[in-house]
Image (cartoon, rainbow over all chains, first blue to last red):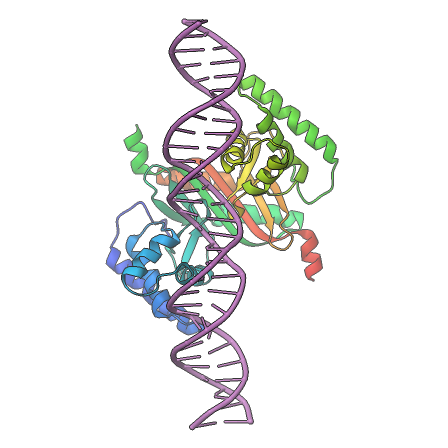
Length: 159
Length: 159
DNA sequence: CCGCGAACGTTATATCATAACACACACGAT
DNA sequence: ATCGTGTGTGTTATGATATAACGTTCGCGG
């Protein structure tokens, strides 16, 4: 897995690939990739940024796919539970997963200036944490690692 | 720094020590350790668990120290900004710092069964994250590392 | 004594999230 | 074929978290 988020890339391609991956993963695991769920993932991929549940809901509303908060939250919960999206605790927001299908412990780099969010591999940090927790008898189930600071572009702008 | 949170310890002693440390740190840095701020830190130390801002506010209310949300949030923000308390993003809650005065990048171990929160050193995980971010040109300013799972007691209860 | 900055008090409102219940539909069992 | 069951969706209502904005107080240096 590479870091995604601060570099340009073929967006249409990455959207199509992620959607297909999700679709296949759902089929393989007997999960329902319903229109609402699919559309929410599309929205996240499309915007390519951390979005609040209400931001997603606004889009759904315009399309007649649901107008009340639970609709958005349920779809987002599904996507997060199955690894197609992540929740950014720091922002109370959601992003499409940059590497769906890969089992991974993502880290997020959150720019406080432009709000860009990059996902980067968190294996080493996550392993370090699991080791420390293991010594205490704590059984780790989920890990959230989030860094706030300045992305490369904003570091330059700042200087 | 040791891990704190799952073991018993002399509570009166640790409250007194933490308060004194905070007081001295404020004096040294020209910060105002006002009655509200002091009391909020006391409350967090006293309860020795992650508390929501409104939980803290309830206590303040009963004591006539302030009854509106901004009072609690301002005091909590002060404590967090100066390292006397931490914010747990996952829980939208706050805990007293287990090692005030020490510069540290804490990790939190959050039990999903009993809601206990332990603070454990995050140096290794934090270093790993900073290294990864540095390679990308991302300038890390703050790091939040939070693990959710089962604490030793609840692992046993579960088994 | 005045001006200033920092903290506090208060009102109002914004933002994020979920409980609870009704309805629709697919699907396997009888 | 129909009935029960599970899963997803639609909707109402409400709960929980957080902050903007503005006035007041108070200590301190000019």
